[in-house]
Image (cartoon, rainbow, N blue to C red; front, side):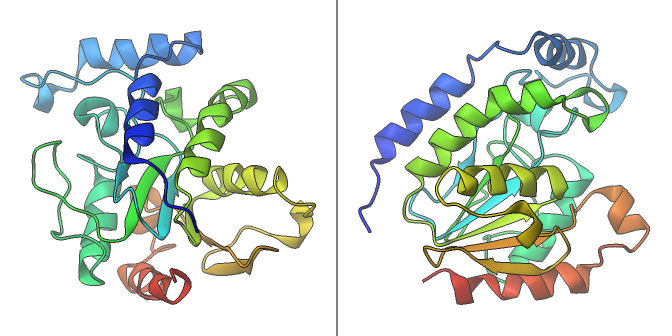
Length: 230
């Protein structure tokens, strides 16, 4: 497989952070960044679209829903600075996908091993609920991004919206039927090109606190990714 040019991905990420296509999202991300949360009053919030992060030659792509209001929208990095990040990175570190169990800021020393993380929607949506049009707008970026990550052999979607974005991408590549790819935790699908699409419950506080998703469940799933990354 032809390796992509890291400079192209860097240019792509630079383009993303200047996007203002969705008025509702621009207004909300800016409002959150200006008002801040009390415990983060000393932070200079990112307040822009959040690009992907990780190993540009990765075999594994991890796709989330969107930046958290006081996580990625504050720190400028996907799955950084919120409870979902705390849980996910703890699990990733346990199976060797990251060099440390925490993801706190852009300058915390985090390195991802053979994986690249990105949100399906680059801006934080109100109440974590993007509109269909916002998802369509951002899918153009998502589509281009996945095409740039052409060393990947498997994709882990965290949550139903992320899974739907991944399916939409692959439906643009092959004639596949949505009904043949139901969303559930730890589903592993082999696509016509032998790429593996894997789904997981989102590591949100709601799912973790209700034990819909446990550490053991996530670690077990993450530990299997290397089988599909060659």
